[in-house]
Image 1 (tube, rainbow, N blue to C red):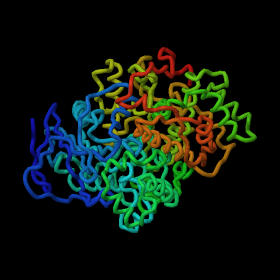
Image 2 (spheres, rainbow, N blue to C red):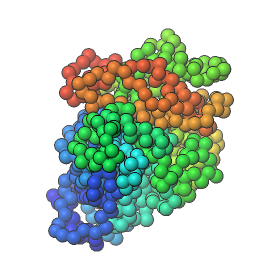
Image 3 (cartoon, helix red, strand yellow):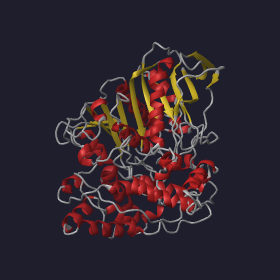
Image 4 (cartoon, one colour):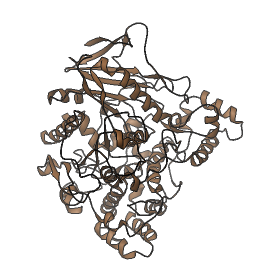
Length: 610
């Protein structure tokens, strides 16, 4: 069935009606003159009826991106075959209650997908909006949901002096998101939404994007939802590093020895898939410190400081809902399975290298994470990934919450993955957003579905301005702390509230906080290194005919501020050496290999090794 609305500036729009929800799909929010040009907001539209009953084109990206994400989820869904476009990808999907009108004034949830700023689309089946919108109606907390596409990879984040001199700005992907927000402010009332009551949310790289928009001095949204990621994890780099990155890209495209003018012309005119398939994994796609959208100075210490002015959005964004999953760092092992080989000895070597004279602290950390040289790989890898979850994801959660000027609500997603695979029984990266969108509900037990429904209901409350659980005390995580925990339902726990940031049912560890002040290092690029690793490994998958025998590169970072642990991630990667052959694990055309050994024993209690 279809439904048609008359808008004030966009004419008639026909959407798709079902289950009490109307979806308007593939609506263009901006136009592009070229793949690197500024997005031009669509303020009004003239002409015939606009058919918004089918999804729009996706951004240029890895063709098997959806397979990669669902592979980590450990469950598949039927996929839509949609075209990719460099010029027509700036579109959005909207889901509203079917009885919504321009006077409904419903809260708006504006969602930014993840994917390492290199893959992702609002039309992937795991992000279908119907069930989420329907659930909001059933819970008596109806919301208007908007999910966007934005430029990824090279069109979204490649920059250089010669591109900027030619008029092509940096941070196109973030600029696209900003334009989409402006479109929502201008037009969402026609669909039943309140432009003054927007909650912007995202997961992983989408969460990082949300926190990058806090650099704006101009208010953009009322509330923020940050799921398993932030700008502290995917850190912006200065133009000098982006220039080196650009030169790598030009060499790979065979453009190193041509003029700047010819290079720019080639980048604009070459087949779009060349920008996906021909650029090597060493080319980085992260935001640039342009002092426009993204300013320097964002560190853990600054983010966690109530008095800091480094993020203007902390003043105008009223409320924050932020959290992480039990083993978010699982994404690194998934994308680099060789990581587990002899991992205990390599991790110990990396840790000892970086604590210097504090060898006793290294041993205490190893004891806390239950790692010794004799620990088998399948046990050690889980402990090591918990370490990186704590230092890369959980630390970000607590820093943002502690330094938030308004109300900050913290959650811990501990519901175990229910499907067969290495992460069965654990809350791995991406699982929280899967439960949130409800699109695999028929493959869950009633208890698991209940966890997902309560999770989403609390988010709906947040969008409505209702505190879903007590906020933490601003400026501290040591007193007046409160966090909502989701799962594990297999132990009879659907949801609970913790009064402490670490230990017990939180399944988070305090050891790094305890010793952080004793090991102070100045920079924070370990976070950049970790996020770069994720994107580079994604891009190795493009080289289907070549086994990725040795995966190295990049700078070895340090982890600073009040979480002062040094270059452990970089050192660990050096110790790991080869990345291994990722093709057999992720390529849809790869032959079946022997089953992968699970990372854990699914029957083992999560608390036993926390």
